[in-house]
Image 1 (cartoon, helix red, strand yellow):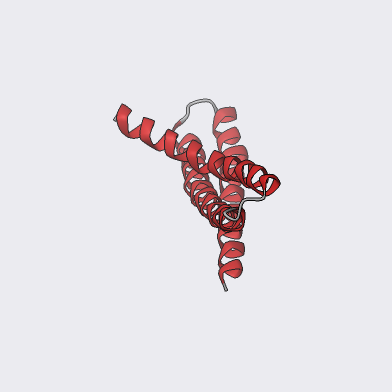
Image 2: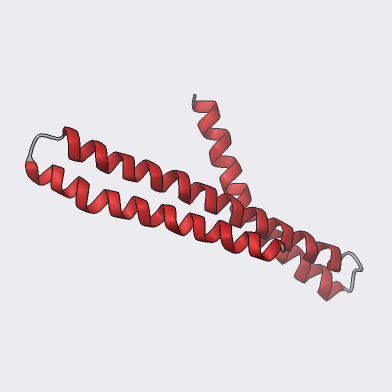
Length: 113
């Protein structure tokens, strides 16, 4: 299980950092006058789309998990204040995050068209 979590963490870090590194290499190649710079820029755009896709999916899954945690807290915690906090804080935040993830994926699908 630790290996799976480690691979997922490295994958998410790579998705987040790769477009920035490639953009830096593009700037360097463009300044040096290399012909490969244009292809690097198009690859950077594709990597940014992968980044948006990954971010949208992570927001949807994370939002649903946060909302489920809020529902669990509202149903199973003992003090009424903790139940109220779970229902009023975690559930709306989780649903908002899910909504933002869906909005990101919709915007990404409009870019492809």
